[in-house]
Amino acid sequence: MLLKLIIFAVATQVHVQSEWDGQAEFIPPSILLPVFVRNKEHALPYFFGGLERQNYPKSRIRLWFVTDHNADNSLEVIKAWKEAWEMEYMDIKIEIRDPRKGFWSDADTELSWSPNRYDHILKLRQQALNHARNMLVDYLFMIDADNILVQPSLLRKLVLRDKPIVGPMLETGVPFSNYWTNQNAETGYYERGDDYYDIRYYEQDFLNVHKVPMLHSCYLIDMNRQTSQKLQYWPRIGKYSEDLPYWPMDDIIYFTGMAKLNKIDLWVDNTMAAGWFPYPVQSGEVYDEVTMFNHMLMEMNTLPPVGWDMIPQASAATPPSWPVQTKHGLSDIFVINLERRQDRKERMDFCMRLQGIKYTLVPAVDGKALTQDDIDGLGIRQLPGFSDPHKPRTITRGEVGCFLSHYYLWQKMVPGETYLVLEDDVRFGPDFVGDLRRTLREAKDIEWDLIYVGRKRGPGADNDVEVMVTESISNVTYSFWTLAYLITGDAAKVLVDEKPLEKLIPVDEYLPIMYGAHKIDSYTKEFKNKNLKAFSSNPVLVQPTHYTGQENYFTDTEPSSDDDILHYDTDAKVEL
Image (tube, rainbow, N blue to C red):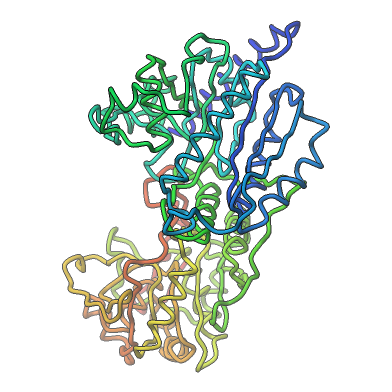
């Protein structure tokens, strides 16, 4: 589906470009962008990067920044960007409304949306309308300071849509987006509409501009229409309280109510990969908002269908501040990566730097490059009678390479130390570092050798009982995947001393045998020291970037041809 969207978007881009160029003798419409900033130091470099890449004439764009209650360096970032770009744009203004740090007097936390804060944002939006009217600009482009625009022709395309109010559909990495397809008529609150998923996931028959009851975070208002003169955020229009008595004063719901009462249609455009915005955090501290934003950045550079295979580009004028990289109390953190998978290497490096994780990159063993001499030289013999649980086949070249990649790491580990092992196709949870720290704290209260950080239950284990031993750690039954696990150096020595190359099976079959949870006795009887103390984060902290069958799913362990399957004779000698 994503490929179809890209083809459609390219075709539309050509149409938009040609239609715009056909009007070259006219001055492009002017646009005002009001940007309200509060504790957005983490987001502004990427916001500015997306803004800079817009191919709309910058000489026709006015920017108005208003900032207040910052506990970070948001103001300094805005000033630095203005200094670098003020000669390119029609105008850039900065206003400091309240230099106090912290949160509103009637708020419980820094991020709480209190009545005073709602009033404040409504007044700011009204001032944006007033500025647009006084400046006689053609369009008002409302956009939040944590939105990242990735479509260079976005502004051009929205203008040419010729709608009273239109916005792009933004990505979040989850079903949530910046529009609704249904709204409760009595309360104004959200209701899921029939077409929501069809629009949200770019279904072919739904690539269009759709009329919707709710649009927020990023939208363009045509200021030349008579209807736009009826828009008013503050003071609140009387009809809102009279005709919609149970609707809240939430600014985005108030906006839809105001449009509804004035019969102004809202439209969302899902014909392009337009941009991203983070899932909103309604309360808590700035740390929570930064964490959610960083998770969005990681989702952006995860291959489809999660993201668009891109590392977000920040403005060169305001480079992002990276957190200090540490090992978070571990002896080392290893990332296993095949040399021919450079895209995964770059993605993992970005994710690890973004999360402040100091790591060691470990070249993986490329099983598909192994020769018979390599196999014989390592003394590899397949476990007699082994067969893949899903398909009737023996071990593959990729599985041999995967096992050796982990095995060589175990050989390097030191007894008494603790390690985290990550494969390069891991998809991090929203607060991976915080969750990892909690897991390590709780692990001090139990005796453990191995803790899965990401895994799935193996065949026949779905109904096995797993008991929580701490608040976020459970014991573990037969499990698959080795994409992320904590391990002690002592456990690694046990795994090596078992001489597994002489009775080789896939590594995610080997681990359950060694902690006594494998389901097939004929396998387990060949192993001696099956007493590792194994547990799992519950819920798990990571997932794979893709599952079998998903768009752009690639695997280096499953066979692509019969040549990738290693056969063996009656003595279990592996033969290529």
